[in-house]
Image 1 (tube, rainbow, N blue to C red):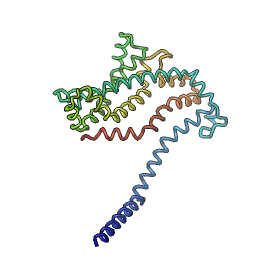
Image 2 (spheres, rainbow, N blue to C red):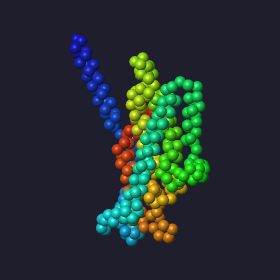
Image 3 (tube, helix red, strand yellow):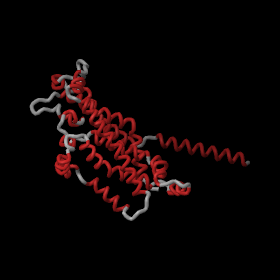
Image 4 (cartoon, one colour):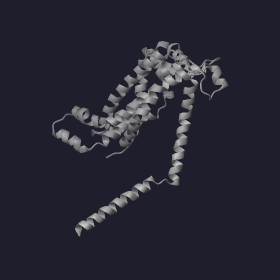
Length: 298
């Protein structure tokens, strides 16, 4: 009797699971509308990129005569010119150096400051957090002239170090804000167990908290790298030597006051955005998961 009742209950569970699966697979009108909206949004964002990629293989005459047609002859002359004559090679190297150094410093300094605010108990922690968050509200235009005059006196103008310092300054607030959320969400039991085992403050930070917050480091590092990779204003004001210009500044040289070679300019744009596209396509899921995890406090 018990076996029959058990079999009947299992059958009901299976039917319930099948019903749930059917309900999940069933498309409703709101779902269809959402899917259509997402597809249209994807087309709106992807179509201009595909058009720029298409015209980067054309000549100026082809662009103006048939802007939406496929190129008659696929050639890489535009890319070769942009990389060599346009000096995108050295510009890419300069951008990479500036972004990597800024990334490393912001991750180290920002994570340490976030650990001190989020995990250590001291009276000025909230005031320090407010101070760092204030940096997120200051636009770069407000400090452009003071920075330029100060860097000119210190000999930091026309120098990559003159870009790294402001990049690091503007990257720290968001890094500290996100990493503080990660450190605050960590269980207190882990810290207490480490203290009972005799771990000091540096061991707790480097061996426990930092590995657990690697998702936050990944997210903030990615945001810092891409933001600095695309930054134009500071690089255009502080750097005047062609050998030290970054990628966004070198792109502006393809637009002249009287004449613009659009085919070469579009080829240069494709070269510039390839790294960001690769990064976003490869790590988009980690970005979403990291931001969601850092927003929840346990």
